[in-house]
Amino acid sequence: MAAPTPTTRQPTAPVAAAPRRGRWIDDWRPEDPAFWESTGRPVARRNLFFSVFSEHIGFSIWSLWSVLVLFLPESAYGIDPAGKFLLTTLPTALGAFVRLPYTFAVARFGGRNWTIVSAALLLVPTIATAVVLEPGVDYTTLLVVSCLAGVGGGNFASSMANINAFYPNRLKGWALGLNAGGGNLGVPVVQLVGLLVLATAGAEHPRLVLLVYVPLIVVAAVGAALLMDNLTTARNQPRAMREATREPHTWIMSFLYIGTFGSFIGFGFAFGQVLQNQFTGDFATPLAAASLTWLGPLLGSLIRPLGGSLADRFGGARITFWNFAAMAVGAAIVWTASQVGSLPLFVVGFVSLFVLSGLGNGSTYKMIPAIFRTQAQQRVAAGADTAVADRHALRMSGALIGIAGAVGAFGGVLVNLAFRQSFLTTGTGDSAYLVFIAFYLVCLAVTWAVYLRPQARMSGV
Image 1 (cartoon, helix red, strand yellow):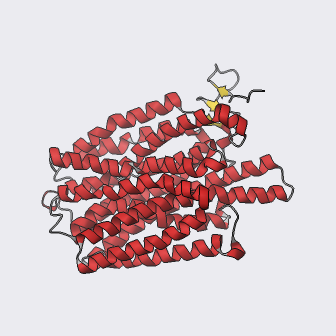
Image 2 (cartoon, one colour):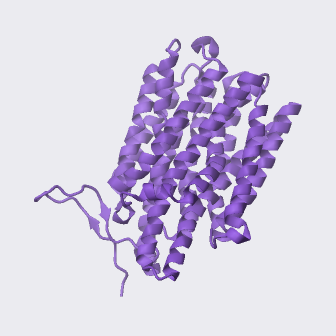
Protein backbone atom coordinates (compact mmCIF):
# COMPACT_ATOMS: atom_id res chain seq x y z
CA MET A 1 0.00 0.00 0.00
CA ALA A 2 1.40 3.41 -0.92
CA ALA A 3 2.32 5.72 1.93
CA PRO A 4 -0.27 8.43 2.60
CA THR A 5 0.49 11.87 1.30
CA PRO A 6 0.31 14.99 3.46
CA THR A 7 -3.06 16.63 3.56
CA THR A 8 -2.79 20.30 2.63
CA ARG A 9 -5.52 22.72 3.61
CA GLN A 10 -6.16 25.51 1.14
CA PRO A 11 -8.20 28.58 2.04
CA THR A 12 -11.94 28.10 1.63
CA ALA A 13 -14.83 30.49 1.75
CA PRO A 14 -15.85 31.33 5.33
CA VAL A 15 -18.96 29.64 6.66
CA ALA A 16 -19.48 30.22 10.35
CA ALA A 17 -15.95 31.26 11.22
CA ALA A 18 -13.02 32.26 9.06
CA PRO A 19 -10.60 29.37 8.51
CA ARG A 20 -6.85 29.70 9.00
CA ARG A 21 -5.14 30.99 5.89
CA GLY A 22 -2.09 29.44 4.33
CA ARG A 23 -0.91 25.98 3.32
CA TRP A 24 -1.19 23.61 6.28
CA ILE A 25 -0.02 19.97 6.33
CA ASP A 26 -1.98 17.91 8.84
CA ASP A 27 -0.42 14.47 8.28
CA TRP A 28 3.32 14.61 8.90
CA ARG A 29 5.22 11.50 10.10
CA PRO A 30 8.95 11.89 9.40
CA GLU A 31 9.89 8.96 11.66
CA ASP A 32 7.86 6.62 9.40
CA PRO A 33 10.44 5.38 6.82
CA ALA A 34 7.86 4.70 4.10
CA PHE A 35 6.22 8.10 4.53
CA TRP A 36 9.59 9.86 4.60
CA GLU A 37 10.92 8.27 1.42
CA SER A 38 7.72 8.64 -0.60
CA THR A 39 6.51 12.04 0.55
CA GLY A 40 8.38 13.63 3.43
CA ARG A 41 11.86 14.12 1.99
CA PRO A 42 11.01 16.36 -1.03
CA VAL A 43 8.62 18.51 1.02
CA ALA A 44 11.17 18.89 3.82
CA ARG A 45 13.95 19.79 1.40
CA ARG A 46 11.84 22.45 -0.31
CA ASN A 47 11.01 24.05 3.02
CA LEU A 48 14.61 23.77 4.17
CA PHE A 49 15.88 25.59 1.07
CA PHE A 50 13.66 28.63 1.52
CA SER A 51 14.15 28.59 5.27
CA VAL A 52 17.92 28.80 4.73
CA PHE A 53 17.54 31.66 2.25
CA SER A 54 15.32 33.73 4.52
CA GLU A 55 17.50 33.09 7.54
CA HIS A 56 20.59 33.96 5.49
CA ILE A 57 19.18 37.40 4.65
CA GLY A 58 18.15 37.81 8.30
CA PHE A 59 21.71 37.20 9.47
CA SER A 60 23.03 39.70 6.93
CA ILE A 61 20.72 42.42 8.22
CA TRP A 62 21.44 41.48 11.83
CA SER A 63 25.21 41.82 11.29
CA LEU A 64 24.85 44.85 9.03
CA TRP A 65 26.48 47.19 11.52
CA SER A 66 29.63 45.11 11.72
CA VAL A 67 30.13 46.43 8.18
CA LEU A 68 28.63 49.92 8.47
CA VAL A 69 30.92 50.94 11.35
CA LEU A 70 33.81 50.65 8.90
CA PHE A 71 32.12 53.39 6.85
CA LEU A 72 32.00 55.81 9.82
CA PRO A 73 35.34 57.63 10.13
CA GLU A 74 35.63 59.55 13.39
CA SER A 75 36.45 62.71 11.47
CA ALA A 76 33.05 62.70 9.70
CA TYR A 77 30.77 61.07 12.28
CA GLY A 78 32.52 61.88 15.57
CA ILE A 79 32.21 58.33 16.92
CA ASP A 80 35.13 56.85 18.89
CA PRO A 81 35.95 53.10 19.02
CA ALA A 82 33.89 52.57 22.20
CA GLY A 83 30.91 54.19 20.49
CA LYS A 84 31.28 51.89 17.49
CA PHE A 85 31.31 48.82 19.74
CA LEU A 86 28.01 50.03 21.17
CA LEU A 87 26.56 50.29 17.65
CA THR A 88 27.30 46.60 17.12
CA THR A 89 26.19 45.58 20.62
CA LEU A 90 22.63 46.93 20.41
CA PRO A 91 21.47 44.88 17.38
CA THR A 92 23.03 41.81 18.98
CA ALA A 93 20.99 42.43 22.12
CA LEU A 94 17.68 42.99 20.31
CA GLY A 95 18.30 39.95 18.11
CA ALA A 96 18.74 37.83 21.22
CA PHE A 97 15.61 39.27 22.85
CA VAL A 98 13.26 38.65 19.91
CA ARG A 99 14.29 35.03 19.49
CA LEU A 100 11.85 33.84 22.15
CA PRO A 101 8.73 35.43 20.62
CA TYR A 102 9.91 34.33 17.17
CA THR A 103 10.00 30.73 18.39
CA PHE A 104 6.45 31.09 19.73
CA ALA A 105 5.37 32.59 16.41
CA VAL A 106 6.09 29.37 14.49
CA ALA A 107 3.74 27.46 16.76
CA ARG A 108 1.10 30.20 16.69
CA PHE A 109 1.10 31.21 13.03
CA GLY A 110 2.91 28.40 11.19
CA GLY A 111 6.46 28.20 9.85
CA ARG A 112 5.60 29.39 6.34
CA ASN A 113 3.39 32.23 7.51
CA TRP A 114 5.93 33.52 10.00
CA THR A 115 8.78 33.26 7.48
CA ILE A 116 6.83 35.66 5.25
CA VAL A 117 6.32 38.13 8.09
CA SER A 118 9.83 37.89 9.52
CA ALA A 119 11.39 38.37 6.08
CA ALA A 120 9.23 41.41 5.33
CA LEU A 121 10.16 42.97 8.69
CA LEU A 122 13.78 43.15 7.52
CA LEU A 123 12.76 46.04 5.27
CA VAL A 124 12.26 48.26 8.35
CA PRO A 125 15.89 48.53 9.52
CA THR A 126 17.24 48.42 5.98
CA ILE A 127 15.18 51.35 4.71
CA ALA A 128 15.43 53.32 7.97
CA THR A 129 19.22 53.09 7.95
CA ALA A 130 19.39 54.11 4.29
CA VAL A 131 17.34 57.22 5.09
CA VAL A 132 19.42 58.53 8.02
CA LEU A 133 22.98 57.35 7.32
CA GLU A 134 25.02 60.43 6.37
CA PRO A 135 27.77 62.55 7.97
CA GLY A 136 26.46 64.75 10.76
CA VAL A 137 23.64 62.39 11.77
CA ASP A 138 22.92 62.38 15.49
CA TYR A 139 24.55 59.47 17.34
CA THR A 140 21.30 58.64 19.15
CA THR A 141 19.60 58.23 15.78
CA LEU A 142 22.29 55.78 14.72
CA LEU A 143 21.82 53.84 17.95
CA VAL A 144 18.09 53.53 17.25
CA VAL A 145 18.43 52.33 13.65
CA SER A 146 21.28 49.98 14.56
CA CYS A 147 19.08 48.45 17.23
CA LEU A 148 16.32 47.87 14.66
CA ALA A 149 18.67 45.59 12.74
CA GLY A 150 18.28 43.15 15.61
CA VAL A 151 15.02 41.85 14.10
CA GLY A 152 17.23 39.84 11.72
CA GLY A 153 18.49 37.83 14.68
CA GLY A 154 15.04 36.47 15.41
CA ASN A 155 14.80 34.69 12.04
CA PHE A 156 17.25 32.06 13.25
CA ALA A 157 15.04 30.91 16.14
CA SER A 158 11.87 30.61 14.11
CA SER A 159 13.68 28.93 11.23
CA MET A 160 15.34 26.33 13.45
CA ALA A 161 12.13 25.54 15.33
CA ASN A 162 10.35 25.09 12.00
CA ILE A 163 12.97 22.83 10.39
CA ASN A 164 13.28 20.77 13.57
CA ALA A 165 9.67 19.68 13.04
CA PHE A 166 10.20 18.69 9.39
CA TYR A 167 13.05 16.17 9.79
CA PRO A 168 13.34 12.73 11.44
CA ASN A 169 15.57 12.41 14.47
CA ARG A 170 18.36 10.62 12.58
CA LEU A 171 18.72 13.60 10.20
CA LYS A 172 18.15 16.48 12.60
CA GLY A 173 21.87 17.13 13.14
CA TRP A 174 22.45 17.42 9.40
CA ALA A 175 19.29 19.44 8.69
CA LEU A 176 19.68 21.85 11.61
CA GLY A 177 23.38 22.24 10.85
CA LEU A 178 22.69 23.01 7.19
CA ASN A 179 19.87 25.38 8.06
CA ALA A 180 21.94 27.25 10.62
CA GLY A 181 25.14 27.16 8.56
CA GLY A 182 23.39 28.59 5.51
CA GLY A 183 21.91 31.28 7.71
CA ASN A 184 25.25 32.03 9.38
CA LEU A 185 26.72 32.61 5.92
CA GLY A 186 24.78 35.87 5.93
CA VAL A 187 27.49 37.31 8.19
CA PRO A 188 30.46 36.89 5.80
CA VAL A 189 28.34 37.64 2.75
CA VAL A 190 27.28 41.08 4.00
CA GLN A 191 30.91 41.70 4.93
CA LEU A 192 31.98 40.76 1.41
CA VAL A 193 29.33 43.12 0.03
CA GLY A 194 30.78 45.84 2.25
CA LEU A 195 34.28 45.02 1.00
CA LEU A 196 33.09 45.26 -2.60
CA VAL A 197 31.50 48.66 -1.98
CA LEU A 198 34.60 49.95 -0.18
CA ALA A 199 36.85 48.73 -3.00
CA THR A 200 34.74 50.21 -5.80
CA ALA A 201 32.65 53.15 -4.60
CA GLY A 202 34.61 54.04 -1.47
CA ALA A 203 33.78 54.65 2.19
CA GLU A 204 31.49 57.57 1.29
CA HIS A 205 28.72 55.30 -0.04
CA PRO A 206 27.46 52.96 2.70
CA ARG A 207 23.91 53.17 1.31
CA LEU A 208 24.95 50.92 -1.57
CA VAL A 209 25.25 48.02 0.88
CA LEU A 210 21.65 48.57 1.93
CA LEU A 211 20.36 48.86 -1.62
CA VAL A 212 21.76 45.40 -2.42
CA TYR A 213 19.55 43.83 0.25
CA VAL A 214 16.16 45.43 -0.40
CA PRO A 215 15.31 43.22 -3.44
CA LEU A 216 16.74 40.13 -1.71
CA ILE A 217 14.39 40.68 1.23
CA VAL A 218 11.44 40.87 -1.16
CA VAL A 219 12.52 37.62 -2.85
CA ALA A 220 12.74 35.88 0.54
CA ALA A 221 9.22 36.92 1.53
CA VAL A 222 7.64 36.07 -1.83
CA GLY A 223 9.49 32.74 -2.08
CA ALA A 224 8.24 31.69 1.35
CA ALA A 225 4.68 32.63 0.41
CA LEU A 226 4.73 30.58 -2.79
CA LEU A 227 6.71 27.49 -1.85
CA MET A 228 6.78 26.85 1.90
CA ASP A 229 4.30 24.96 4.12
CA ASN A 230 2.95 25.10 7.67
CA LEU A 231 2.96 21.96 9.85
CA THR A 232 0.07 21.35 12.18
CA THR A 233 2.31 19.06 14.25
CA ALA A 234 4.71 21.94 14.92
CA ARG A 235 2.16 23.73 17.07
CA ASN A 236 3.50 23.80 20.60
CA GLN A 237 1.11 23.50 23.47
CA PRO A 238 0.71 26.84 25.28
CA ARG A 239 2.73 25.64 28.28
CA ALA A 240 5.67 24.28 26.24
CA MET A 241 8.05 27.17 26.87
CA ARG A 242 7.09 27.33 30.55
CA GLU A 243 7.67 23.60 30.88
CA ALA A 244 11.02 23.92 29.15
CA THR A 245 12.16 26.57 31.64
CA ARG A 246 11.73 23.99 34.41
CA GLU A 247 13.88 21.46 32.55
CA PRO A 248 17.52 21.61 33.84
CA HIS A 249 18.89 20.67 30.42
CA THR A 250 17.41 23.87 29.00
CA TRP A 251 19.76 26.04 31.00
CA ILE A 252 22.73 23.75 30.63
CA MET A 253 22.40 23.74 26.83
CA SER A 254 21.76 27.49 26.78
CA PHE A 255 24.99 28.01 28.73
CA LEU A 256 26.94 25.84 26.30
CA TYR A 257 25.39 27.65 23.35
CA ILE A 258 26.72 30.94 24.72
CA GLY A 259 30.17 29.46 24.24
CA THR A 260 29.58 28.39 20.64
CA PHE A 261 27.05 30.64 18.93
CA GLY A 262 27.69 33.57 21.29
CA SER A 263 31.34 33.42 20.27
CA PHE A 264 30.52 33.17 16.57
CA ILE A 265 28.14 36.11 16.39
CA GLY A 266 30.11 38.21 18.89
CA PHE A 267 33.39 37.75 17.03
CA GLY A 268 31.61 38.31 13.71
CA PHE A 269 30.36 41.70 14.88
CA ALA A 270 33.62 42.74 16.56
CA PHE A 271 36.45 41.30 14.44
CA GLY A 272 36.81 44.25 12.07
CA GLN A 273 36.95 46.75 14.93
CA VAL A 274 39.38 44.58 16.89
CA LEU A 275 41.74 44.51 13.91
CA GLN A 276 41.54 48.28 13.48
CA ASN A 277 42.20 48.94 17.17
CA GLN A 278 44.70 46.15 17.89
CA PHE A 279 46.84 46.60 14.76
CA THR A 280 46.35 50.27 13.89
CA GLY A 281 49.25 50.51 11.45
CA ASP A 282 48.23 47.46 9.42
CA PHE A 283 44.53 48.38 9.24
CA ALA A 284 44.53 52.15 9.03
CA THR A 285 41.84 52.15 6.31
CA PRO A 286 38.35 50.57 6.35
CA LEU A 287 39.20 48.65 3.19
CA ALA A 288 42.19 46.98 4.88
CA ALA A 289 40.06 45.82 7.81
CA ALA A 290 37.19 44.68 5.58
CA SER A 291 39.60 42.59 3.52
CA LEU A 292 39.92 40.13 6.42
CA THR A 293 36.72 40.38 8.47
CA TRP A 294 34.74 38.01 6.22
CA LEU A 295 37.16 35.05 6.32
CA GLY A 296 36.45 33.76 9.83
CA PRO A 297 32.64 34.00 9.62
CA LEU A 298 32.70 32.31 6.20
CA LEU A 299 34.68 29.30 7.42
CA GLY A 300 32.67 29.10 10.64
CA SER A 301 29.42 29.06 8.70
CA LEU A 302 30.56 26.48 6.17
CA ILE A 303 31.73 24.05 8.83
CA ARG A 304 28.56 24.20 10.95
CA PRO A 305 26.80 21.37 9.03
CA LEU A 306 29.91 19.25 9.59
CA GLY A 307 29.51 19.78 13.31
CA GLY A 308 25.97 18.43 13.08
CA SER A 309 27.03 15.47 10.95
CA LEU A 310 29.89 14.58 13.29
CA ALA A 311 27.45 14.77 16.18
CA ASP A 312 25.07 12.43 14.32
CA ARG A 313 27.88 9.92 14.00
CA PHE A 314 29.88 10.25 17.24
CA GLY A 315 27.47 11.98 19.62
CA GLY A 316 26.93 15.69 20.16
CA ALA A 317 28.34 15.77 23.69
CA ARG A 318 31.63 14.17 22.66
CA ILE A 319 32.16 16.57 19.75
CA THR A 320 31.16 19.55 21.89
CA PHE A 321 33.59 18.55 24.67
CA TRP A 322 36.64 18.38 22.43
CA ASN A 323 35.53 21.47 20.57
CA PHE A 324 35.58 23.58 23.75
CA ALA A 325 39.05 22.27 24.52
CA ALA A 326 40.21 23.43 21.09
CA MET A 327 38.48 26.81 21.52
CA ALA A 328 40.41 27.41 24.74
CA VAL A 329 43.62 26.70 22.83
CA GLY A 330 42.52 29.04 20.02
CA ALA A 331 41.83 31.87 22.46
CA ALA A 332 45.25 31.27 24.05
CA ILE A 333 46.85 31.63 20.61
CA VAL A 334 45.05 34.96 20.09
CA TRP A 335 46.21 36.19 23.52
CA THR A 336 49.81 35.14 22.77
CA ALA A 337 49.71 36.86 19.37
CA SER A 338 48.46 40.05 21.02
CA GLN A 339 51.29 39.91 23.56
CA VAL A 340 54.02 39.56 20.92
CA GLY A 341 52.31 41.77 18.33
CA SER A 342 52.16 39.07 15.64
CA LEU A 343 49.43 39.83 13.09
CA PRO A 344 49.71 36.48 11.21
CA LEU A 345 49.44 34.48 14.45
CA PHE A 346 46.57 36.71 15.61
CA VAL A 347 44.59 36.09 12.41
CA VAL A 348 45.28 32.34 12.54
CA GLY A 349 44.07 32.17 16.14
CA PHE A 350 40.97 34.25 15.50
CA VAL A 351 40.00 32.35 12.35
CA SER A 352 40.40 29.08 14.25
CA LEU A 353 37.96 30.42 16.87
CA PHE A 354 35.44 31.15 14.14
CA VAL A 355 35.84 27.65 12.69
CA LEU A 356 35.55 25.96 16.07
CA SER A 357 32.56 28.05 17.12
CA GLY A 358 30.82 27.02 13.91
CA LEU A 359 31.63 23.36 14.51
CA GLY A 360 30.36 23.65 18.08
CA ASN A 361 27.16 25.33 16.92
CA GLY A 362 26.27 22.23 14.94
CA SER A 363 27.16 19.76 17.67
CA THR A 364 25.36 21.57 20.50
CA TYR A 365 22.15 21.92 18.46
CA LYS A 366 22.25 18.21 17.68
CA MET A 367 22.33 17.56 21.43
CA ILE A 368 18.96 19.27 21.98
CA PRO A 369 16.64 16.86 20.11
CA ALA A 370 18.85 13.95 21.20
CA ILE A 371 18.29 14.79 24.87
CA PHE A 372 14.52 14.70 24.56
CA ARG A 373 14.57 11.72 22.22
CA THR A 374 16.46 9.82 24.91
CA GLN A 375 13.92 10.91 27.50
CA ALA A 376 11.10 9.77 25.19
CA GLN A 377 12.70 6.34 24.84
CA GLN A 378 12.94 6.10 28.59
CA ARG A 379 9.24 6.97 28.92
CA VAL A 380 8.27 4.36 26.34
CA ALA A 381 10.37 1.75 28.17
CA ALA A 382 8.45 2.67 31.34
CA GLY A 383 5.12 2.03 29.58
CA ALA A 384 4.21 5.40 28.03
CA ASP A 385 2.55 5.62 24.61
CA THR A 386 5.13 6.01 21.83
CA ALA A 387 3.23 8.67 19.89
CA VAL A 388 2.64 10.76 23.01
CA ALA A 389 6.28 10.51 24.04
CA ASP A 390 7.47 11.51 20.55
CA ARG A 391 5.14 14.53 20.46
CA HIS A 392 6.39 15.63 23.87
CA ALA A 393 10.01 15.31 22.69
CA LEU A 394 9.31 17.39 19.58
CA ARG A 395 7.48 20.03 21.58
CA MET A 396 10.24 20.32 24.16
CA SER A 397 12.97 20.35 21.50
CA GLY A 398 11.32 23.28 19.74
CA ALA A 399 10.93 25.18 23.00
CA LEU A 400 14.53 24.56 24.05
CA ILE A 401 15.82 25.58 20.62
CA GLY A 402 14.09 28.93 21.08
CA ILE A 403 15.40 29.49 24.60
CA ALA A 404 18.96 28.32 23.82
CA GLY A 405 19.02 30.44 20.68
CA ALA A 406 18.02 33.54 22.64
CA VAL A 407 20.38 32.97 25.56
CA GLY A 408 23.23 31.98 23.25
CA ALA A 409 22.81 35.14 21.20
CA PHE A 410 23.26 37.20 24.37
CA GLY A 411 26.75 35.72 24.37
CA GLY A 412 27.41 37.96 21.37
CA VAL A 413 26.43 40.94 23.50
CA LEU A 414 28.86 39.84 26.20
CA VAL A 415 31.67 39.42 23.67
CA ASN A 416 31.22 42.96 22.37
CA LEU A 417 30.94 44.41 25.87
CA ALA A 418 34.08 42.50 26.91
CA PHE A 419 36.01 43.97 23.98
CA ARG A 420 34.63 47.45 24.62
CA GLN A 421 35.67 47.37 28.28
CA SER A 422 39.06 45.84 27.52
CA PHE A 423 39.95 48.49 24.95
CA LEU A 424 38.65 51.26 27.21
CA THR A 425 40.75 50.17 30.18
CA THR A 426 43.91 48.68 28.62
CA GLY A 427 43.91 49.78 24.99
CA THR A 428 44.03 46.15 23.85
CA GLY A 429 41.74 43.12 23.85
CA ASP A 430 44.04 41.11 26.16
CA SER A 431 41.69 41.09 29.15
CA ALA A 432 38.83 39.87 26.95
CA TYR A 433 40.92 37.02 25.55
CA LEU A 434 41.72 35.76 29.07
CA VAL A 435 38.01 35.82 29.94
CA PHE A 436 37.25 33.78 26.82
CA ILE A 437 39.86 31.14 27.74
CA ALA A 438 38.39 30.74 31.22
CA PHE A 439 34.84 30.53 29.92
CA TYR A 440 35.64 27.82 27.36
CA LEU A 441 37.29 25.73 30.08
CA VAL A 442 34.16 26.05 32.22
CA CYS A 443 32.00 24.95 29.25
CA LEU A 444 34.28 21.95 28.74
CA ALA A 445 33.90 20.96 32.40
CA VAL A 446 30.11 21.32 32.29
CA THR A 447 29.82 19.19 29.14
CA TRP A 448 31.85 16.41 30.72
CA ALA A 449 30.10 16.53 34.09
CA VAL A 450 26.55 16.47 32.71
CA TYR A 451 26.73 14.45 29.48
CA LEU A 452 29.97 12.45 29.36
CA ARG A 453 30.80 11.46 32.94
CA PRO A 454 29.96 7.73 33.20
CA GLN A 455 27.63 8.25 36.17
CA ALA A 456 25.61 10.90 34.32
CA ARG A 457 25.87 9.83 30.68
CA MET A 458 22.73 10.09 28.55
CA SER A 459 22.86 7.47 25.79
CA GLY A 460 22.68 9.00 22.31
CA VAL A 461 23.35 12.64 23.30
